[in-house]
Amino acid sequence: MSDCIFCKIAAGEIPADLVYEDDLVVGFRDLNPQAPTHVLLIPRKHIASINELQPEDEPIIGRLYAAAAKIAAQEGFAESGYRTVINCNDDGGQTVFHVHLHLLGGRRMSWPPG
Ligand code: 5GP
Ligand code: ZN
Image 1 (cartoon, rainbow, N blue to C red):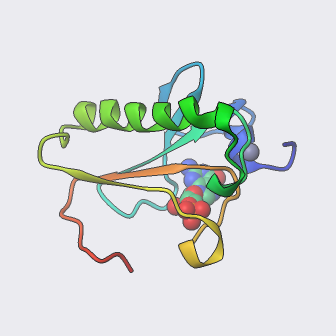
Image 2 (image 1 turned 180 degrees about the horizontal axis):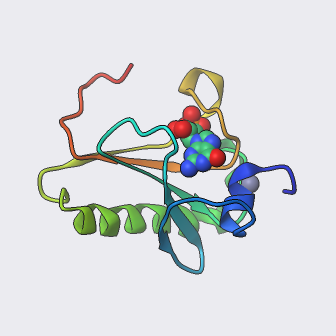
């Protein structure tokens, strides 16, 4: 999608602090981090929200989590723990309509989330 900021990051058209790339997904640091490590994992394919997921997209979602686990290990908090979140639509707090998995680590998370 031509006007999607995350599509532009995936295409290298606008800069981001990339930490992970493979054939299906890209990971980069959030501009407004909510934890010592806050990485966004996105599919290269534009999918607006998890409501729009098609059956053929399911391997992409698996890859988002596999990439998050690799980054958690690299960042050194795989064992101590971390949070992964996909927000959906207004009540979920989604502000960018290209699916993204938040990986938050490096501090203790509270529950329930706000
Ligand atoms: P959401 O609220 O949709 O779940 O999360 C969107 C996230 O994208 C927010 O945490 C926000 O800080 C981040 N974000 C928005 N625009 C940009 C950008 O241009 N670059 C980066 N690195 N992060 C962004
Ligand atoms: Zn997009």
